[in-house]
Image (cartoon, rainbow, N blue to C red; front, side, top):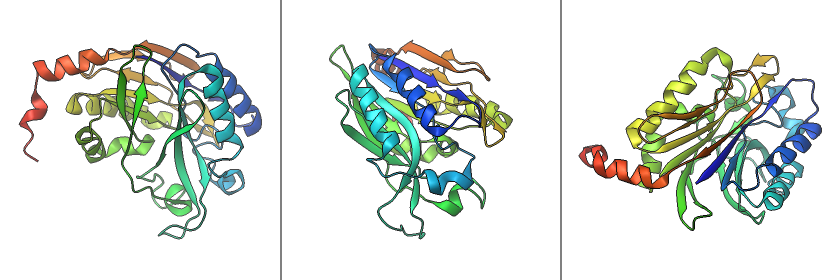
Length: 268
């Protein structure tokens, strides 16, 4: 399985419309990959709370539509990161926004939608402005070799909650796809937790972060691909835009689980 993680880098002065065009062009350059991944909230930014309401879009809005077209043009499965979705109506918390990830098939059709379950902000940002997702979402990603990979979808702050990944594992996950807007201040946690989720679940972990700044917050970069053994197969820099292109051996994950069957010893 050939994977590309697009660690998008930008400064706060770049208009969102220009960034959408730039991201779409980067996706089109990844033709030949089975899966391409973009970061969390790369359009409206992860810390630009004050603009979320004005930049929110429905699932068929401008940013999602542009990403669907890019996936189709490149002929890749595209995890388009996440955007601020405007919901059809208020949810249980009375919010009309969500942090929503979308997965597009190689023909541009929408194949999965995940709304972030764990909202980051400690009483500001996401908890105040956004509805929490409630569904554990997995998707089967086809590969050129004719196989497919079962992927669990999550977003950024979700990484701190291991029970979500156990749920995905029990639903058949072989890999976890995690877009993020993770700040530089805690990027060591980002790297460590990704390896932990890989080791404890014997799953491949694909983590795609941003570089640059979000509303003045320095982002951490360090996108990485981690094997089911915990080996870091590739890691991006902390500060620069970068594309990680990695061959992921799905058969190796199955072989490792068989050779070291720790998951069979679970009691809880």
